[in-house]
Length: 167
Image (cartoon, rainbow, N blue to C red; front, side, top):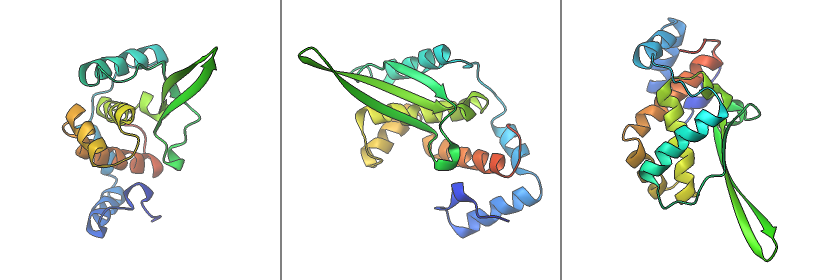
């Protein structure tokens, strides 16, 4: 079996458990049982509104977002599930910043909790640019089960990588 690239940082005993689930063809069923609910965020406008709801609840004072879209150019293989960018432009004598969040299209068909996890992750970058302790504290403030969702998302991506369908 090929290496589990999404679980590379986890202990060997945990990776062995995941390999056993894959060999028994049970990983997809377990994920479906736990995360069977899909979401209704199907297009860019809905994604923008969904993201703004979370931002307005937890990050009211953060800089405004100009754009939130699904991006089919983001490749999960390159470990980019979402991006947060700030583009600065000169307009006359002023410098104007435009903030964008792009979410990989794999989340259009992923369980609702995984979309929330990636949106929370990208929103946290509005306040913290690095993946440091304050960043993860902000993530867990917006999604208390953030760490479990991140791990389960890695299981989901591993399942897709091994040829499994969406949950």
